[in-house]
Image (cartoon, rainbow, N blue to C red; front, side, top):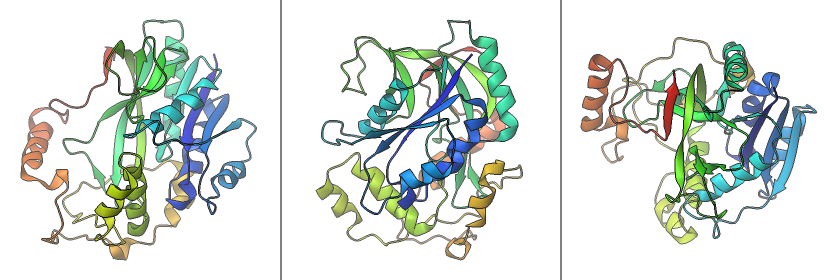
Length: 316
C-alpha cells in the first residue's frame, strides 16, 4: 500500500499559514508529498519554507493561478486537482495549508487505509474536525461550522476536488473547468476514520487574519469589489468576545509546538463578553444559531441538524 500526501499553496509565508507543520504532521505515514506551488508575490518565500523541511518525500510542482479562468473560488479546486494528478499512491491524503493532524491519530489513519485498501466500494475517508478560533485555547463547535470532511480519497481519475476545494466528488466526463458542476457529479462513498483534523485557519495575528480574508475574497470577487469591501475596514481583524467559546483541554499536535510559541497577539484579543456594537455579528453570535447550537449539544448529542454533507457514509 502506498499513500500520497498532497496540497496546494501560494503566498502562505505572508499570511501566517502553518504550511510546514501541516505537511510534517502527516509526513511519517505518506510515501510522497506533492505540493502545487503557485507563483506568489516577489517577497513570498513559500518555496524556501517547503525546502526547509528537508525531506526527499516532498515534490514541488510549480503552477500559475488564473482567477479569470477559474472564478468564484474554483482556482483552489483546480490547484488541488493539479497536485492530485501528480500523486502515485493508492490512497491520497489531502491536507490544506491550515490543517494539521495529531501524531496520536496517525496509526489509526494508516490502519484504516490498510483495512479498506481492497474494499473498492469505499472511495474516501471521512475525518472529524476541530476549528480553533483567535488563539490556541478556544474553538468553535457551533452550528454552521462543518464537523466532518473527506480528506483521503482513492487515486481514481474521476475523483475531483469540488467547489472551492472544500471537498471531493466523483465527476464523470469532467470538462476540467466547472468545479461547481452538478451534471454527473456524485457524492463519494466514504468510511469514517476515528481521527481529527486540527483546523487553524482562524488562528493568526489580527492583521494577518485581515490580510488572509482579503486574499480569500480575491479568489471569489473581482479586484474592484474587494477593494471597496476593505476600503473602510480596519487593518486588524476583530475576533469579537471569546469568553463564551469553549476551551480546548486536549493536546495540540507536537509539530505545532514551535509555531504556538509565536503566539503574541493575546493583548489584542477580547476575553470578555463585551462586543463592539458597530461590528457585524459572526454567525455563531447570532441568536438563531446560538439556539440551534444549544439544542444540538443538549438534545442531539452534539451532532448538527441539517449539517453540511457532501458524501455518503457507508461504513462507520
